[in-house]
Length: 120
Image (tube, rainbow, N blue to C red; front, side, top):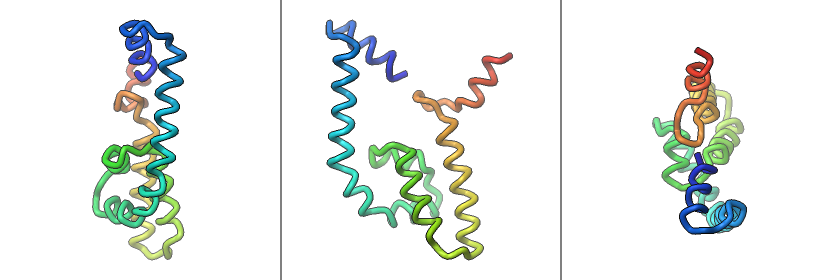
């Protein structure tokens, strides 16, 4: 996981876990501030890609953007569209995609299946 990698890096470079965690957190905030506007300005492109079959997770990875925020961009725009049958179908498919993102852990594993395996 992310925290394990930070811990390994802190041991490797002789820096504290807290210092490295803070560094990566600040780098992420700077990245988001610099790139959010350009990603949001392409929202309709992202919606079209999603409706043409791209997964929310793949779109987020392609643009180096948090999956939850990519899902929000798409959901906000599809939800405001007219409620035609194709839009309702797209909303249903999107909710399946959002559930898939929520169930994926930091390593890309389906957390619902890994948690059920731990119960056996």
